[in-house]
Length: 200
Image 1 (tube, rainbow, N blue to C red):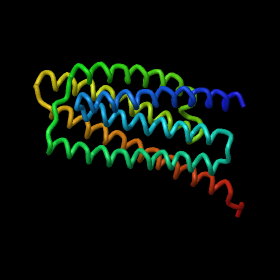
Image 2 (image 1 turned 180 degrees about the horizontal axis):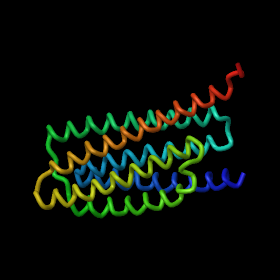
Image 3 (image 1 turned 90 degrees about the horizontal axis):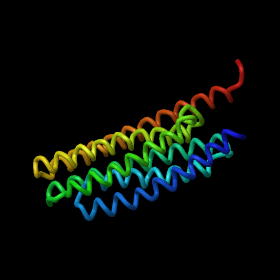
């Protein structure tokens, strides 16, 4: 019961933090014409939705927890595809990302995601929906570092190409996270099926 309470408290904080950064990154990325920030913001928005689902799954039946984790992976997959399409559109239409905004906002997002990892550390080997939350935050830290690097390269090279490249890289990280979650769900389902099978 104590672990359940800690998980609920951590997920509530994660939902609030990621929901806030979703708005900040998407609005800032759109204004600064940064695909890296937009992709990272969409990722954090997906995380916020998933954390809400995980909250609903706490204390529920194992099948509901697995459904929440599976849906989380599907949301991540869909957002990765949408972000890739937006990268392609900007590559064709052109963009002029603003490095100062990219660096400042990604630093804020990095701080938020480090805090999220601290909150989730004790739950990273817990139930499947909490494992999914850990994967999301770990992936986000990598994405934030990538946007920081892209901001520096955009300023150095005076080119939008690094921003578009990091947008694709963030999409790849999101896709990898979705695949990892899907594998963990399948592993948990197989384990549950084995436990339920009658002894021969």
